[in-house]
Length: 119
Image (cartoon, rainbow, N blue to C red; front, side, top):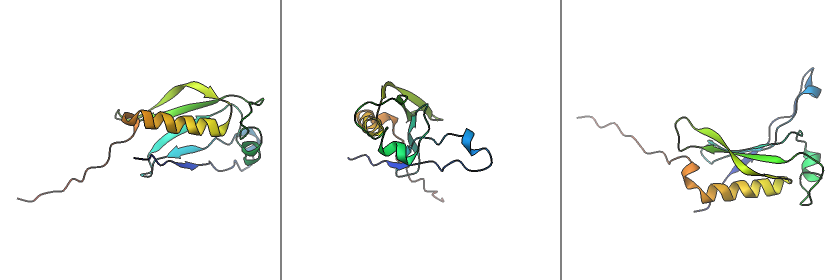
C-alpha cells in the first residue's frame, strides 16, 4: 500500500506587524485530513528560498530542518521528533515519508463503521 501525503504551506504573514512573523515550512496531512508531519526550521519559509537555498541538494547556510511526526497510536495523538536533521526540504520530505512507511503504527487507524442496530 502506498502512503499518500498532502503537503500544505501556511499562509504568508499579513497585517501590521507581519515582518515579525515567520512563515512555517509545509505540513503534511493524510488523505483523511489528520496531521502527519510537521517540518520545523529556525529560518522562515518563502517560495524563493524553497527553490534556491532549501531546495538545493547541496547543503547551504540555513538552519537544519527538523522532522516531527504525529504519533496516532496514542489517544490523544502526540508529536514525536525524529532523530536526524536535514539540510534540504526535499530530503526532509523524503525522510518523513520513509519514516511513516517503516512505522505504520504511527498512522491513524482506519475508521470503523459503527452502525446502530435497533432491537
